[in-house]
Length: 396
Image 1 (cartoon, rainbow, N blue to C red):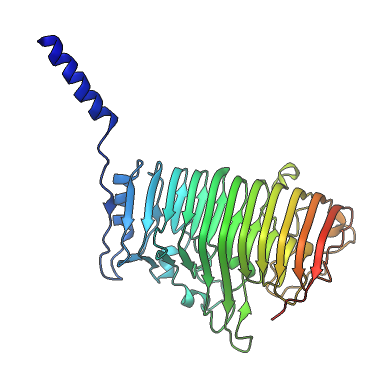
Image 2 (image 1 turned 120 degrees about the vertical axis):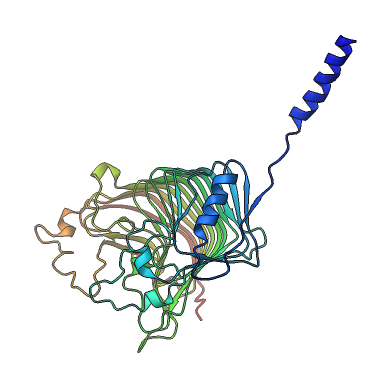
């Protein structure tokens, strides 16, 4: 009898262990008033359900965000944003903060919308119109920096009007995917952004195995005395120490399209010569309506830039501007003269430049593409290849 009881218990206990009870999702309700900071409630849910759990922000909720949302407790967590995160419009609260949504040291996290209704609203139209003398509130955070993290998915959401950069991958992060996103900067009435670097959709530095798939980026300003639809910002800036970058199915209606841009993440923070490289980068099915549609645009001072195994394949140029550009002495100048800095005279930046471009391919271009703008620079090596270019003149 005891033997039969023991065997029966083993069968029941074994069945229970094979089918563990799943923890219910953590559902976060908004406080209901703009003056209430909903970030602490979201952070508490991430702490409670962050270990392989699900956190839901329902579709009918608007969350007022006064402080950083912290993903650091996440281990394979799934944050399902179906409602709207609305950044609180007090720039003194955000000054000198590093992030609005922080993924620092996270090993496995999803930020996604299953319905496509999820929105992160930077609420920054007034920030764009700020009084510029003295650079008031200049040190605003990146919307979502991914630093020292891996196995991250951002999918299915709309992100609009971040005060500064949108997505940044850095700090030896890897296995990062952005998909099915809309990135928008709009209605910057009165004046355009202070510099192109103020609005960048995607920045990659010191990172690997990053995918951008099925993304629309639209950044425009309506400013006093200027065009109604003035292109601003950067679609994708690929900075140094990056490898295995795959960008596909992307639309860029911006000032700068998809470019190698050493120095886009940190101005005048020059790494050693051995770290000034980017390799194994593929950009495919790119539709670009930009001023600088693709190519290379490094800040002055990156004297030993090395780019290897870069391919643009399947590019539709919709703008009247050159399809490719190379500018290895770019300065975020706000109108200052570059003549003394970007000079081939002794001591000038171009005299010091020793860039190397190897195994660089530009394939299957169409649109207005009669001029490339890719002249090799002083003391540099340029191994450029062009294949199947069709000047179809697809202009608006």
